[in-house]
Every structure is written in structure tokens, then in C-alpha cells.
Image (spheres, rainbow, N blue to C red):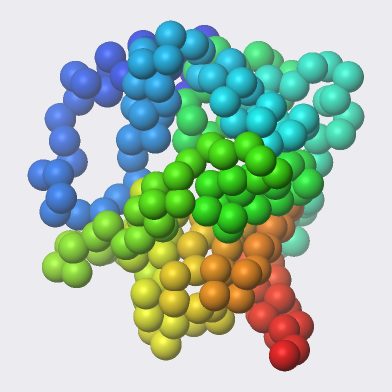
Length: 234
């Protein structure tokens, strides 16, 4: 996505495109979160980065999370590891170029400590250290499967077997159908360069992995999840 395009301009362009399928008949990737981000801008009267800063990051103490970093933090950005098969270093977004298009579904830079704080807020039912961002019932709705069992789920259904999808997160419904360990109600999602989080409410567990390895992200995610659950000893 061109960095010079605003969120509102992106939505105007999307509105002119035909649908890939009828709503409610299939699951696939799309720009829905970016449309939601533009809607937040309209309703709040604030640009999305300012809204996030005032309504999410400051209340939760997420001091190192932003769409556009100040230059003094550039040297803290993790660089991608070389691909083990080709030796090439994957190209990621150039963080020194200011983003005009924010999106909401991409582009945030953060730290493991900040990410953990956001996850803890969700595990707590929408609250962290006295700052409430969401009601308990909102978190419950967000982390409940929203997909009709008859919905078409082709090869691009990223969560995989055993999972449904809530409001922005994959939700584990049938642990026995998934190749990954977990509990009913566990929810998760990951980033294109390898980052991943999951929250397992029955175990009161949060896991965050911050890596920059697009080519091997699934290998590391699966290995990390196995190690986390194998470490549980009652």
C-alpha cells in the first residue's frame, strides 16, 4: 500500500471495487480492518495514530508502540534474519519513511513488553491496572467464534483445522482437530514478518513471540507453542 495514500482515500477506492464473493459465504483475507480504521477516524474526529495513542497506548502504558517511530528509536527496530535456504534478507517496510496510510490492520511497531500489556488487558476482561478499555462482555464477544459452520473455508483459511474466527482473532473450538496444543477458547493471531501472540484463558496464559523471519515464521511459531505448553507443570 502506497504510504502517500490516506486511510480515507483507500476506503474510497475499495468502495468502487466488486466483491470477491457474497458477504457471509466465505472467509478470506481482505481490507476490512483498514475500513474499520477509517471509520474510527470519522467517528472520533482523530487520525488513527492519535486515537490509538490517546485511547489505547497511553492508558495501558504502551510507551514504545506507534505507526511512525521517532528517529531516535530507529536503531531499536529488529532486522529480519537471512532466509536459511537462499541467504537473502527479506524486505520489510522501510520504517524511516513516514506512513500516511495507517490502516489499522498493519504497520504498528512495538515491543514484547508493550504487547504483553495489551494481551494482559484482554485476559483481564478489558482492564489493566485500573484502565478499562473494553467491557468484559465485549472481550467475550470478540473472542467467540463468529463463523457459520457451513461457511466455505478454502486453502486460505489461515487459522487452520479446529479453529473458527472471532472479531479479529482466531478462536480454538476443537483442540483435537488442530495440530497445535491449546485449550478450548484460546485465541491468537500473528504478523506477516513472524510476530505472534496467543491467549489461553483456561490456563491464564499469555504468549508473545517477536521475530522477524517471514520465511520460517510457521516453523518457529509451532516450535514455540510446543515448548510453552510442554513447560506447564501442575
